[in-house]
Image (tube, rainbow, N blue to C red):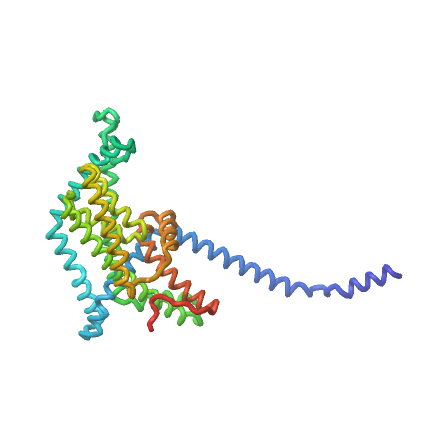
Length: 368
């Protein structure tokens, strides 16, 4: 009797036949739906990783569009030019000085770059003789200094690689410039397209976040261009004043690599220091003083003057952003590490820290 009573109690607590059928079917469908969503997200991330080079070019084109719009918007607001006419005028205002500079100083720049490349091997050899530190340079002679078939083949391969790299860089530059003009012609079209990928309830937040990101990139870009111009000009004039060869090339190189945060100034100083080492200790001391002075001017004068236009990012965050971007995206990631970090800082601060966590935080690029 006790066993029968226990079995009856178990049967009473067990759901009737078919009771699990509806709930079990719905549970399996929900589980399958979640699994498909996770799989779709993983596939999307893998696809984005596969085309990361194209995405990097698209981001560089966005920076070009930000620069063009920074010139076009005042023309549209103050001169009442139609938007597309203002963009065309901005392209002419930005591109014409660059073309004229290339035409006027292009031959001199090419000669100075060749002079710099010719002097670097001798400077590297001087460092090797003095300290025993070998600095490998492409196209150098073998241990015996003889030119055999293998050396000729190696030089030919290096020349072919350099030519291919130059073609790729030129093609990438054309894509970035053309894409930037298309972005600048109608930025609202692309902003709305990105927002429509999200649920309707989140589209307004997405558009607001994208607007703040664009303004923060504009502030960073204008300040960075001003700093790069100042660093390149001061370095070139200083190199000319102390007697370094190829001062125009040294100034151009220092200005260009200044876009890389924190480590850019050290990279920009390397060619000048190498050349100065081969010219004696006195020239080396003058060259070191020149680069230190330029960086002090940038850090203590330019940065405070541009403070209102600079996007404040912790130095450690910038450093590791450069390392991570270089490891994941190569040279392009290193060059674009700072603006990528600006985008991440704005989106995290606005969408997560402020709107999700509810904490008060200043977000760069927001209108007062």
